[in-house]
Amino acid sequence: MAKARIVWTIILSIVAVTGLGFGAFTLVQGTFRSNTLEEVETSSYFQPATCTITDVSHRYETYQQTVGCGRGCSNYYVFCTDIVQYQFMIDDDDDDKKKTYYSSRKSRTVRNKQQIEELYEPEDLPDRCSTGTQYQGYLNRLNVDDPNGTNDTLTDEQKVLFVCDGLCANGTVVDCWAPTVTEGMSSIQEWAQCGNRDCIKLVDPDIELSLAEKEVEEQMNLGIVLVGAGVGATVLAAVIYFCCCRPKVDEVAEPSYSSSVVKNDV
Image (cartoon, rainbow, N blue to C red; front, side, top):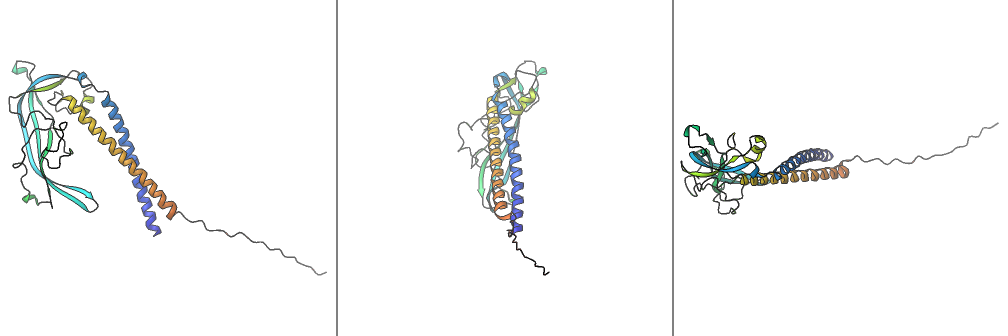
């Protein structure tokens, strides 16, 4: 029993150090990123422009997923994932020979999500892309709270179109944004999700900035959870050690003294 308690104390100590270390690092990094984003004025980096869609890449595939729901508990889902990317040119010159073609960033979204009782064998995986809701063009991340993947539960703020309502057809003229600066592009790339080196964008930079701020918020929350777990593990390890594992000090009996008188006969 004592050995088991010592082992648990060691395990909890490792968890405490790991949680506190990674949690502190995540919080510091998140704070730095948050401070950087707070200083960003998108109008100082980008200006509106007009672009024309020249090609579209739309890949879709059915996937299945296991999501833990507690100890010994798992939920299983099957859904369709769409990956869309556009090729386009900026309409700043009438001379086709001088036009430059760009790639947008990729948009990855989920639709037709369904909970299942158990995972399918690969050859039996049902097609969730050809049936149900078709691709609607929303710019949503995979972790958006949309249980059915139908966009029915999304807020108006989350229902932001990637570019077009559905897929853009070739030749569609759309709004785009071009950078106004040539230096410091690396700092812009951190939040603007540029799909090309020149950072010509089909997605409003204000939207990209809000998504980056949301990501930082989630990072900060993760850091708080890790630090909290580390503190909890520290307290629990201390309780186990001091209450159960600390060596007991044996009581030492006070010494007794006796005197004797030796008589010498003369």
